[in-house]
Length: 501
Image (cartoon, rainbow, N blue to C red; front, side, top):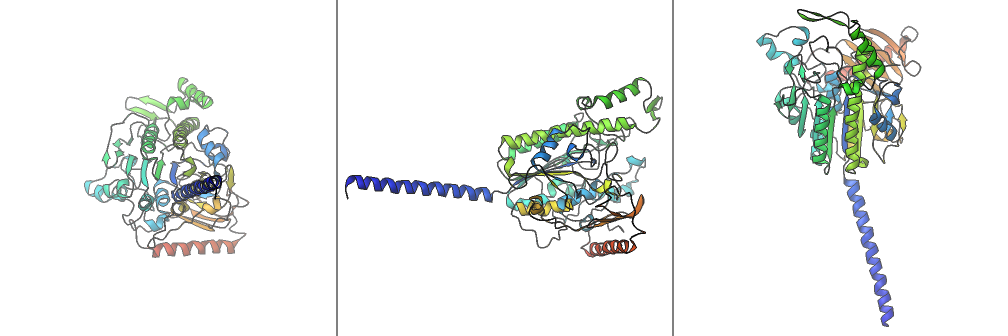
C-alpha cells in the first residue's frame, strides 16, 4: 500500500467517524428533545363572556395577545366548564374530576359581610364557606406533575380553601402569590373590607394600592425568569373581569380597571363621564354616604369590564414574549379560557343566560390552546370538550401515567386538537344545588330555577326553542342519563361537606 492510498483511506475513515459522531449527536439531541416534557401555562379569566374575544365575534374588545393565541393555535367553540360559577369550576380544572366527585360542589367564601350578616363565634367556626376547602385526599395537577420534575407556581385567584392545609403550597405548588377567596377589590385586595392577599402561606398587605393584575403579571414574570430552564407549570388565574367585592356602592357590582385602559374605549368613557358631569350618575351623596339611585349603568359596567380584560391581555402578552425570549415557546402548551360564563358587563351572545345559570351562557366559555408543532395554527375545533380534559391531556403530554387509584372524568384531547381524532366526549353533566343540566350529543336538557327545556344545540345554540313536548321520549332519555350520572357520583368515595346536591 503506498502512502497516498493510506492517507486517502485514513481520510475516508476519519470522515465516516465524523459523520457517525454528527449523526449520534443529532440522535441524542432528538432523544433529549423528545424526553423533555412540555411546559404548561394555564391562563384563566374570571366571568368572561363567550363573545368577549375578537376571535369569537366581539367588535369591541381590544386584546391583541389573545388574538395572537387564536392565530397561532386552535379556537374551541364547544368548550364547557363544570359549574356556572367560580369555586367548583376551579376545583375541576385542577383535578380532572366532576365537582360532585372531588367534593367541591359549592362556593367557598365569606358570605357574612356580603349580606350584612355577622357570624356568631360558634357559627364562624363551622360554616363551610369559612372552613371548607378542596379535600386533602384529592390529587391536584401540580402534585401529579411533580414526580416528572415540574416546578409549579400560581399567581392570582386560588378559591379552594383559606386554611393552611388547603393553600396551594400544601397541594403541590411551589410558589403562590394571590388571593384565596372568590373576589376582591382590585386595588385594596380586600373582600368587603377583609384583607385577602397571600404570599405562600402568609397573608400580606405589602402591595395594597397596586392594581392586582399588575401584581400577578409581576409574579408570573419572576417565576419564568427563575424557572425557564426546567419543566414548569405556570397557573395564572386572573380575577379580571370579575366584579369588585367592595361594599362601596360606587364600586360594587362592576369590574375595576386603570384609567389608562378605560381611555382605550373612548365612546364608553365619554358616555359615562358625561353622565357624571350632568348629574345623571347612578349614585347620590348623602350625609350617611353614597346612596344608589339605580343599578350601575350598562355603559359603566361595560367600560370597566372591557378595560380590565385589555389590561389582563397586556399581562398575557409579556408572558408570551418571555416564552419567545427564552426560546421555549415551541415546547410550551398555553391554554386560555374563562372559569364560567360572563357576569355583569359581559356579552355572552349568541348564547342564552349568564354566570350562575345552566343555560349555555353560564357554562360554555371561550377557549384557546397553542402547542406549536402539535396543533395547527389558526384552526377551529367544534368538538364537545370540557375543562375535565385538561389534567389528563397535560399528564399524557408530560409522559406521566395516570394514578390507578384516581378516577378521572376527562380524556386526553390532544389527538382531537391535532385533528387526528374526533372528541372522545359524547356527554356532559352539571348540577348546581337544585339546578340540573345534561348534554348528550347535540341534545341539551335543563331543569332549573331560571327555566327548563330540551334543546337541539345543532340547530338552536341560543336555546330558544323548547322541544320537550314534541320530543317526550328524548326528554325521558336525557333525564335517565342524568339519573345514571348522579348515581355514579353518589357512589363515589365521599368528599366535601356531604350536602344533598
